[in-house]
Amino acid sequence: MTVQNPSPFADPAAITHYADNARRTVPGMDAVHRMSSVLLAEQAPSDARILILGAGGGLELKVFADDHPDWTFDGVDPAPAMLDLARATLGAHADRVTLHTGYIGSAPGGPFDGGACLLTMHFLDADQRLDTLKQVRQRLKPGAPFVVMHISYEQESQARERWLDREEAYLVASGGAPADARRRREAVSKALHSLSPEQDEALLVQAGFSAVSQFYAAFTFRGWVAYA
Image 1 (cartoon, helix red, strand yellow):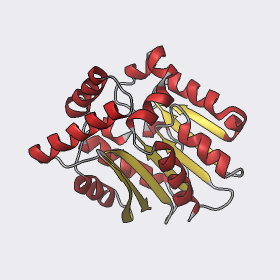
Image 2 (image 1 turned 90 degrees about the vertical axis):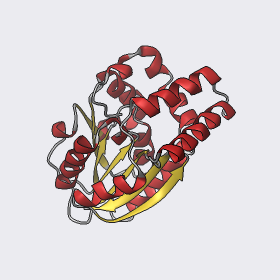
Image 3 (image 1 turned 135 degrees about the horizontal axis):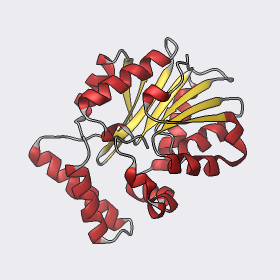
Image 4 (image 1 turned 30 degrees about the vertical axis):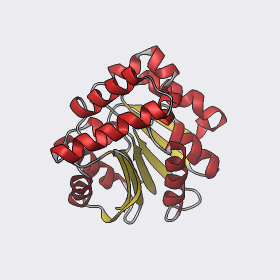
């Protein structure tokens, strides 16, 4: 994941359990990766070069590489330990992926045939998010697809609390300890830069993307596909 402060992803315990924790906290995460692969392939050529922002862990990279044996990838993430995990996750696909330590400014100029940014943008405030989206857009070929998914839910106070209640209940129903679910709720509420889906869509348009459409919604998470 791309974060403004990557220190949480330097914790060995967090890294060891990253994949399991992500699957437990994000409803349908494996399906999101598969849908993202399909959406990118609608426009990307068989030998596409794809940009992955927030590539730490390598979960989506592994799915994309499995699905498309002639694609190559550039992945960017500020946490070196998470990039090490991505290399291990990729296994035999690692030679098709160039990983860069840093934020979007560390990514090559492209042009890329498509891009993805999953579970990342909620670490950035609105201004940082807009700047990042603009830089992604500049690196994509005209018409190239961009898939983005992150925490995004209603921000009006009553609705906001209702969705956080549901998120917390989902984590407990999925086998999580109530205390852990409450800590995550507090982190989502206070530490992350959550916007409403309408605000997120507006930022994509402001950054220069067109034909923005939502393909995924699950409690506090939303996903879109847009085109450069």
